[in-house]
Length: 138
Image 1: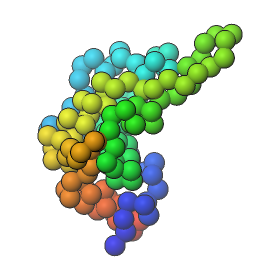
Image 2: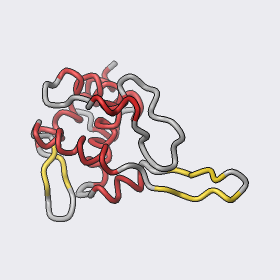
Image 3: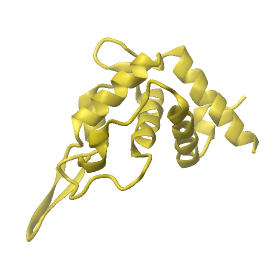
Image 4: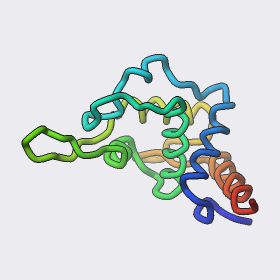
């Protein structure tokens, strides 16, 4: 039996995103197509399924590092802000997107609050491990 750490992260995230797309409670809001993902970006995300990829990525991060809060997730999804001729600086990612995704994952009972942050539930852990097991058998 394989666990999440045995699978290739990029293929695991893509497969989990496909599963999340089929769930009723996880839907991208209409404003996501014209909203930047953080102050460091110049344009909105170009992927069609960005919302689901980010949700899958958040699930993987919670599996690895949970309990983890929105502030730490904002730091993880941040990046360099280019300031023209001035030096670049690090900026955190947008918190609204992360909060909304976590709320949707809580409604699907994949994530729960635990003290200062959120952790995966048994349902969330088994979902990631089953998908990793499928991927490593291929």
